[in-house]
Length: 62
Image (cartoon, rainbow, N blue to C red; front, side, top):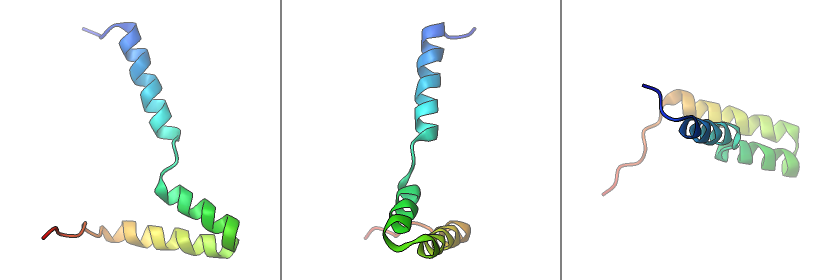
């Protein structure tokens, strides 16, 4: 059985909003491009991708 239409609409709106909201990586790249130029922004992109591709685990808490 499907949920009511208003519930599906609300869920769809929340999902759409979260999908288009930029994250911290996007903010870093945009700020770097605005302040330091395109070359440095590509460096930020490369650093972000290198960190993501390594799958670096979060720091352990004491």
